[in-house]
Length: 301
Length: 323
Image (cartoon, rainbow over the protein chains, first blue to last red):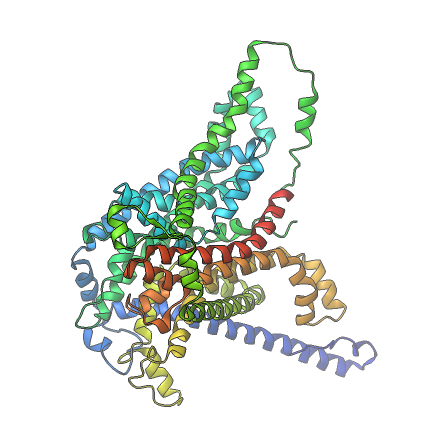
């Protein structure tokens, strides 16, 4: 739909034609708007449908799930699938393990990343650039390629089948991004603010605690949630490292859901919904920061 | 965000004559060490958990490391034997070709569709944009194990919603159609999962970039009679080029090493029709305990990725220097 330039003939045209031109232009604009909205709805439907299908299946009765004709909306919803899922073997073990792993990864990587980001943003030192390059390159190392040596060296020091091994590994993969993001936030704090605090008799540490920390608060939150999501969603490391069912994370628990008798789709979708829920909540809180964080300043150059 | 140049005031401060007060010297040396102290913990962890395994990967790839060596924890040096074996294996080249095609198709689909959705987001009104963004974020948040299971359920051969819908759209009978019998349609499903999961990040990032394109430029071009495509090609795209470069290289890196989707969709025991390089390396090492051979394949992957990441790293360093 090329809109041409409907305004061009207007000046010389008589009043009636002019009005008609304006009318069609208006109608065409309106039509365009409707079209865009329809396309928007369509894209929304296609993207969200799989998620909807998971949630709605989780609330359906067994006979409605195993029916050739799909039940589009579960009118008489049931919680039976959820109760089935959480009473399956190892579910609560998995929840506990996931929580331990995630909270340790978030806590540890935040502290380490914040310290390193402080050095990158507020100091100039020999090796600064090299460290920045390492931080970026490390993000590119394919995790899957490292799983063999990681497994062999961790089993050498008896860290396989322990949560600690998984925690340390996740932390390493979260750190580069966390350092990079926090560095961006710390850059945004004007030096004058810190200096003002120091002139007022505050020590460097005092200035840090009272001025810097509150200002980068949002950055810390965003980074924490990024670490949370990474650690919660990771699969292959946990899958290879934690072979003992008591030690598995929710993701691995879900992957072993299928039974020999065939898949129990209802409880599986309920389990999947429960696994996804925490991430969805946190994601809705911070997605904007993550998108901007990765490419922050990309356009300004 | 105000652009400042911290480099400007800094030299001025250093040019001041050093104050001859002795007791500060020790302080100043200690001050010099502060940044190193701050960086060391993070750097140490990265070296231990990334640097050492990377070295070990290289070492393993030159060794025979089978079940026997796993027990004794000592590999047997074989030189380049693993590499000659892998590179001389026609199966390996099949897998390489498949991986390259898979990566190309997935990256292209992700980038093109992601750009279209981003442009759509920019054209939508406020309410619809919020709705679509929320939907995208919802998809983005799905853990890979979850999304694989959702798609497996949708294409289930007996009760899957896909078969019913396609049959009722008059596209032929899909009743009891198993999508994974024919590898081409199986790869189609895997591609759908990968692209579906990757789209939100790409679309939202490009949209974030679009909002930073100066409106005057677009308006001026529109007044000069440029259509939508011209505006995109001559204004939007050049301005957003850094973002496109970063996203494309990230997508290549991610899609090249896809593993989880294939592994989980094929019930954790894929047939060789469903091997990508990552899967091949994993099967070689963890299923049949040829860790040396698996490492050689993994190292070939790392080397390939290094070439791609070079482009990405250069772009990021450029941006880092701008600050």
